[in-house]
Structure formats: structure tokens, C-alpha cells
Amino acid sequence: MLLASARTLEHAARIGALRARSAQLRENLADDLTALEPLCALADRVTAGIERVRAHPEWLAGALVLFVVLRPRRAFRFARRLVLLWGLWHRLRPAVIGAEGGEGHGSVGSTLAWRARGLARRLFSRGSRGDARARARP
Image (cartoon, rainbow, N blue to C red; front, side):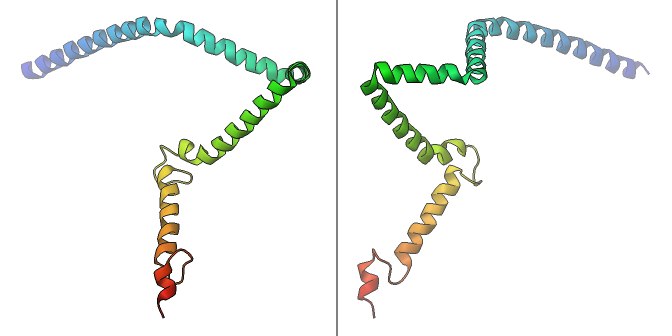
């Protein structure tokens, strides 16, 4: 009986110490997160701005028309860069989005495996276009 109550007291003391440690860690985390408040405020303002533009797309269209009218050369240069970036994004998107995915659809691993299978098929098949030795064989 004495052993069980000593063990219970040890557990109660350990639980109390763990609760105190948890409270201290929560306070430390709250102190550390105060440094992120300006960044969170900026993110909130950006989000509010995006919501405002989505609610009133005519503002964006008007700004775009004004930009094209006032600076046509710069506007078309900017549009060309946007198209190039859009194409680059669509080429790199499977690797960027699937980077964590392992062998899933669109992951780097599946994309590389798919390309490696195609390359191996072309290299080792008889009569492939790029293999001169395969054409020389009877």
C-alpha cells in the first residue's frame, strides 16, 4: 500500500512538473510569435486587397486600360513577360507541385520515371530513329 501511494505521489509530481513546463513553453511561444505580428498584419492587408479586387474587378480592368493607353510599349512588354512566365510555370508546375508527392501524379519522381522509360524505350528498341546501330543490323 505504501509503495502504491509513493508511486501515485511521484506520478502527481511528474504531472505537475509537466504542466508547469507546458505553461512555460506556451508563454515562450507567445513571446516568440509577437515578432510575427507585423508580417501577419501585412498578410491580412494583402488578403483584404485581393478580396476587394475580386469584389470589384472593374477597378482592375480600368487600371489595365489606363496602363495600356498611357504606356502602350511598356504594357505590351509587360504582357510578353507575363506570357513567358505563364509558359514557364506550366512547364515547371508538375515538378513544383508534386515535389513532396514521391511517386504520385505530377511528382518529380513520376515525371523522371516517365521520361526515363521513354528514353530507354527509344534507345533499346530495334529500328529506333536515333540508333544508327539498330538500322545497320539485319
